[in-house]
Image 1 (cartoon, rainbow, N blue to C red):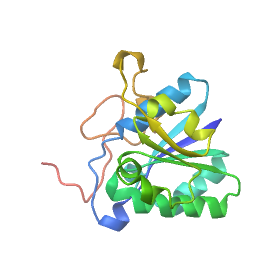
Image 2: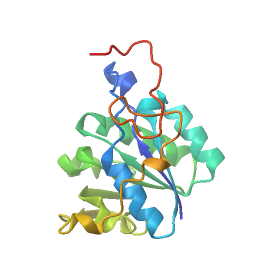
Image 3: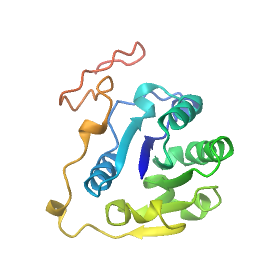
Image 4: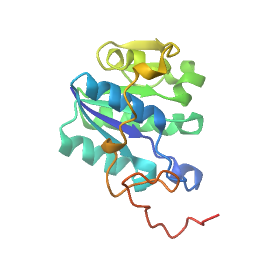
Length: 179
């Protein structure tokens, strides 16, 4: 599978400027899927300041057949709107919702047009959410050492974290104040 994992943008809806912390959930899911042989890319739309149009363009130009939308609770509405746009513009694309938002309000997430929803820890059901429709419950990870390391290398080199140095530069954003 060719999978795009997206940290769903909320910056236009909330006016909140993120701290550029990549979502650990997507980094672990990306690592698990890659370990299983899938072609994976992660887009931190918040850090890029991408909105739906840029994500749609990436999905079309990248030839992704599966998209995983990860969000916090305050991003569930945005994820549902983005899923609707992707489904309308790219017939046959598989959309999966995951993260804190869908896990906290699975009933609301089920009203979306997503093909599947991941509730809880997604590492144990990472492939399943891209192959089987419905709600998939990921249980606790009993042995954390069994997980591959988070796939920081799947993040774009131009987008880093103010708090995680790694090999990524800190983005220059005029409206972020250093504390």
